[in-house]
Image (spheres, rainbow, N blue to C red):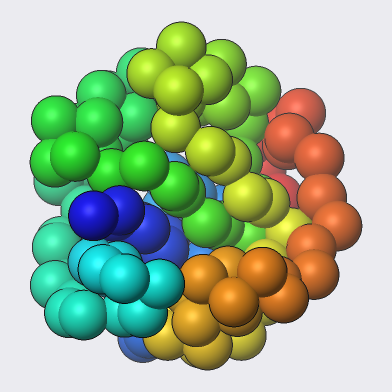
Length: 113
């Protein structure tokens, strides 16, 4: 079983990971999405969210953008980081599962975007 978290605002991929309203967490079994849970963002503070998602058992995080500090913590936890995604949370999770998610992105270097 794999868990994919998508940083979201109104079920759309959020432009900045830490500022999302919710994490749409998709459970993948046998190569298919088997369920989804919407988890409210408990608050953006340095280093907290990557550890929070790790504790939830997340294996993949998908977002529009993310700071390098968060990327580094996810990497330490061996959580795959996908940035540069756009669209609905469900569509990007489906595309990821199928191996069709086309993204282009690099970590954010500023927090006022």
